[in-house]
Structure formats: C-alpha cells, structure tokens
Length: 451
Ligand code: SAH
Ligand code: SF4
Ligand code: F3S
Image 1 (cartoon, rainbow, N blue to C red):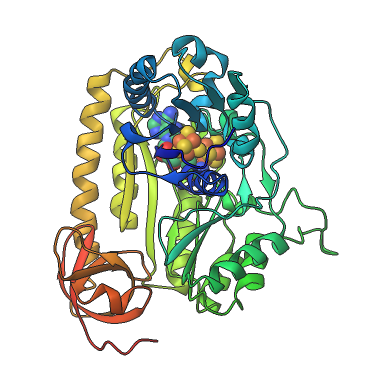
Image 2 (image 1 turned 90 degrees about the vertical axis):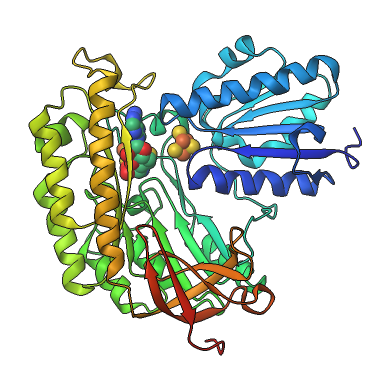
C-alpha cells in the first residue's frame, strides 16, 4: 500500500521509556514516508503509546480511544494502533473491548512497527505481544528535542516488586552492547545534541545479561564502565542516567560521577517507602538504613548533588506509624523532587490480591499530606540556588513568557531567563539565580559567551 500521503499522530502516556519508544516509532513512520500532524482528528493513523503503572493511567487510554473508535465508524480508512504497556497487559482482550482497533502491540515490538503495519494494511487485525529479543534499532528516531536525547541502555526489568506491572509488560532485562550505545551517541553528537540521558527501569542492572566477567568475577559491563566508555564522545556535554535502584547502587558509581565532568550531579533513586516492614512487603530488597547510607555517601562525595525519588503511600497494610516513617525519611534526606503516588492495585501483581487494602480515603489523605511536605521541602532546597551562578543548558523557549528561554541546571532544576532562543538553543549559559520557586528557578544570564 502506498502510504506516503498519509498523516500520523502519536499520543504518549507514561515514563521516559515510553517517550523514547514513541520517538523510535515516529522515526519508523517517517521512514515509511508518512508525515506527522499535530491534530489527531486529521490523522490517517493514530497511535496510543500507553501506560499501565496505575489504574488512572490506564483509564485515560480508554476514554481517548473511545473517541477515535467512533471516528473510525465513519472513516474506515483510519488506522488505530495501541502500543505500550496497556497493550501488552491486555493483548487480545483489548480487541474485544475496542473492536475498531487494527493493531495491539507490546513495548518489545516498537522497533517492528513497520512490519506489523504491513500486515494491518494487507487486511489483518494484529496482536503482537509475544516476548521477543529486541532488535537493534536501525531507524532514526524522530526526537522531540534537538538538544537533549534519551538513549535506552537496558530494556525490561528482572525485579519483582510486589506492586509493579513493569516486569509483566516490559519483559526480562536486555542490555544493549556498549558498542551500539556508543554508536547511537556518536550520531547524536554529530546531529548537534548536547545532553544524553541513559535509560533503564533498573539502570544499575545494566550489563549483567551481557557475556564477560573480570577475573574477580565482577561483570565486565556495568553502568559505571559504560559511563567511562561513552564519556569521550565529543559534542555531548552532559550525561544523565535513570532510574537507579537502591539495592544495586554502588560507591564506584558515585566516584565515577564525581570524577567524570560530563556526568551531572543528579541522582534519581526511588525509595518507595521509609518503613522497613513495608519495604519488605514491597520486595524491594533494601532497608531504610541502606537507603540513608547511599544518600550519605553521595553527599560525602558531592555535597550539593540533587536527589530525587519516587514514593508510594497507602500500600496494603500500611499503618499510620509506617506512613509517618516515610514522612520522616523525607524530612531526614531533603529531596529536590519527589514523584508521589497513592498505591493502585494492578492486574497480575501479588499485592493486588492481598486482603489488607486501604480505603481510597486513607490513601488520598496520606497523599495530600505527603505532597504538602514535598513542596515545602522542594521550596527549601531551591533556596540554596539563590544568588548562585548555575550552568544552564538551553532547551527551548518559555512558552508562557515570550522573550524567555528555558533550560536545566546540572542538578536538573528547570530554569528561565531572558534571552533569544535563536542564539541560545543548545548553549550552556552561566545564569545568576534571582528567584527560586519549589520546582523552578529564574535568573539572569551572566554572559552570552558560552562554553
Ligand atoms: N523502575 C523504577 C520505577 C518504575 S515505575 C524503580 O524501581 O524505582 C515508576 C514509579 O511508579 C515507581 O517508582 C513507583 O513509585 C510508582 N508505581 C509503580 N507501581 C505502582 C502502583 N501499583 N501504585 C502506585 N504507584 C506505583
Ligand atoms: Fe517495577 Fe521494581 Fe522493576 Fe522498578 S525495579 S520497574 S518498581 S519491578
Ligand atoms: Fe508506564 Fe510502562 Fe513506563 S507501565 S511507567 S509506560 S514502563
């Protein structure tokens, strides 16, 4: 089928993995000769890249889908695709629920979108959810930013946290080779990208499925080794990585971050709960004390490092006292940013079957108290930037305030200042911070001469 005059639209839910997958799928559609449109109602192909981490994320997908399914009744040429984690979780069932769908495809199939569409356009309704060895991506992703790029280094997750769907929907760990990662980053550098965020659900697991160990039995390929390996790529000025797991986090990694100038002083290390009993029930494999030791070590090497995390409240059986242990851990650490969530029972996860579930009311109340603490603390942490000069990598315009550009500090604080985007995009600018809010800063450029 000749699809070159066709337009597509992609709607992405969920985490950075999904965003990275969407960029690769858009690259595949571009490759087929299709063109991107901003308006889903003008598109001949609409793709939903879905998230199932919590029930509300999943429900959002169904309400969006309903609208396009209706459109298909009058426009039978419309191609409707559901990709991502809900697609993997629901598979065939999704077709029964929304028979207008043409293609249901799990995250491991993202790089095969073109082959799957070929089957669709030949007249089949396709479900692709079998587990797969992920093929190296040979298409060029259509990246949203021109400055900062995501690079997957490990797919999947071998942990079994008792609340989490990710291992069910993303499959087992599959690391890319250091060579493939290096090559992708070298191309990004040539294209003018300045910052790369290495991605994995449990990024500290990187390499353990690749062949080779050192004489002492350590894996030859670790995240730390990878950081050294890719550090010399000229043009890439900043390196970040996410998500770290407290169980696997090493001092070697902290040392590498301190030693390697391009690696930004920001750590995203979810702790999920500050109570040892709850951590055990979550099957996280570390204690509150171990987590605090990690933070202490990071601060010993890099006193100013930014620290962010994820936390869940209202896990089955969580008592008020256990919840307060979480609040207390937050008080003790002082986070720059926290992603908070009320526990949501997910299909196929152990905790969803337990009979000690808490009421929505209790969960909602705890979430509210938690969020209050989080923003107060973020506000306090922000104050330390006042009057300081921070290096800001300019990523775009501040759409809310014309004449201002926006970027991030090395600690990942969103920062705004007056400037000309045409001149500054992709530049590192020293900015004197004049205003500090909980989650963003405002400042003045010291000089427009950039590094
Ligand atoms: N791999 C990362 C997290 C991936 S999921 C890690 O191990 O930390 C992103 C976040 O969603 C989690 O950190 C957790 O805080 C939250 N989350 C996962 N499952 C959840 C559930 N069932 N209910 C509420 N929040 C959940
Ligand atoms: Fe989910 Fe745990 Fe894996 Fe993170 S480490 S993706 S929370 S199972
Ligand atoms: Fe959601 Fe899947 Fe990411 S469930 S958080 S999109 S791995």
